[in-house]
Amino acid sequence: MSAQKSITDLRLDGGVLCLDFVNTISNRKKMPPVDYLHHFKDVLQWYGHTGSLPVKTIHTLERLAKDYPQKAAIVFDKSIALRELLHQLFLSKASDKRPTPADLFQFNSYVGEVYANIEIGWTAGGAKLQFNAPALEQVYWWLVKSAVDLYTADQPMPVKECPACGWLFLDKSRNGSRRWCSMSTCGDVDKVTRSYQRAKRKLS
View: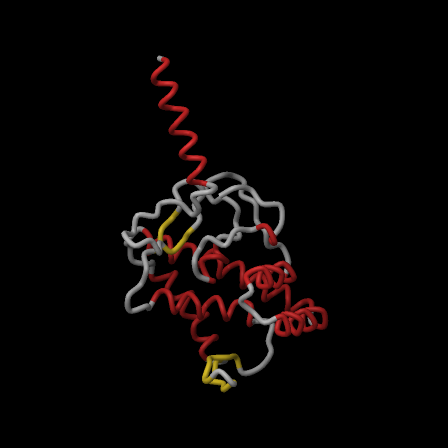
């Protein structure tokens, strides 16, 4: 995964909302990593980039954050804590390991909060899940919902870790052979590196 300068340049290689959020750290295998989220407004900008929340909802949350800056800061901290928790949970899944009891306990506290605020709504397109009132916490509620759906899917796609940058992604390939977060970034770097090593061996 190549370095990005802004959230709007950030690649969405995770394949699902919660993993794309986990991947808002530039490179987990390179220290120090670049974090693209520093304030609540950055999370809203990221949502705008993903297109996963209606613009109207984002504008409502922007107004709430302006009116309640201290609460917005608390929600931001909880969102970042969730990001690191999801990284641990899905890294365990990618390694075919059970999550730790502590991680599950912490995640379930988020799950309980989310499902206490979710309801069935009705639109022209039919029934849908929605939150019962505008709230700053929506920025992590949707992430929890995404993670629960992924973790409990009847026929889940494999979650993998990119060996180059540490990003997590869903392997949607037919034969489950995808290795890199993106062939145009980490995969291409690996290809060039291996070509260089082969050429070097021929000369030695």
